[in-house]
Length: 146
Image: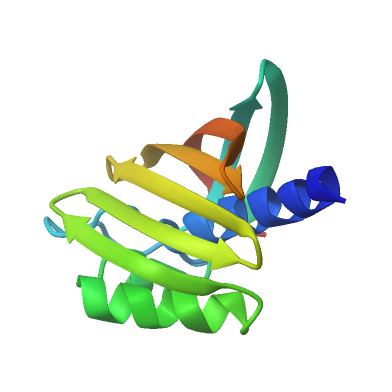
């Protein structure tokens, strides 16, 4: 049960990290303040030596949330969690977005740093007092969404 909850929460955390850090299907110009540009991204996530890859497209609303201030970003992340999880902290400092999300007994803390068309993030998930898993994710823009 804890392993399944950890997998569900970790996957949800990764998805939220991507949502709070990625963008639209139609490419938009990168502005000086933008952390990430719109499009299709390829991700590599490493957890306990296991590597997963995926591709995902992000909307203009996703992009807007990533490039927003802490309040707007947190509001968007809470809406994306759909009540299944609670965002307990959310901070934006320069190109780095950090937050903590609680999903039942599982708590995930994520810090993601953006570089316009790429990013890297580290997430640590705990269940109770046990560190369940640490995940390092990198993402790179791979074009426009189709």
